[in-house]
Image (cartoon, rainbow, N blue to C red; front, side, top):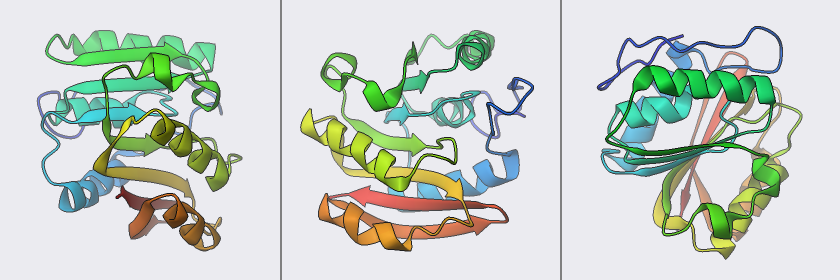
Length: 194
């Protein structure tokens, strides 16, 4: 895997062997960022949450493209160690990057997100997680005022698992679906917080 564009474009990202990580492949990540930029605009200076970081590919791609703040959560020890190694290869001194060995579903956001409002939020959880798990995390972030108005949420899931039944549920909490894409076995929902 590699970072696709920006100041670290072409830089290799290592992925642990095994089934614990299901990285977003380069082609899908490129399409995701193209859609994201058409919805959000430039991500220069953005604050980013990578809720289920894995290899860190999504968060590091955002940093490479100009995001200023990144908080990444990973609760698997081996994956977290790999995430740290990938970050050290970047040697990024211009950005504020926090890599947390923690379960985002149990996070105390009032402590983690001090003075940060996220503009972009990536959710690429293990496929056994339900959309309601993602919504619970978003509600916890809203509760501590950690999501900016107009923020874009990118939620990746198995395309066989329809998101249709959840659209209204997310909308009731201020997260409106603005786009959906399918890339073979992967579906990506783009939501906007208003």
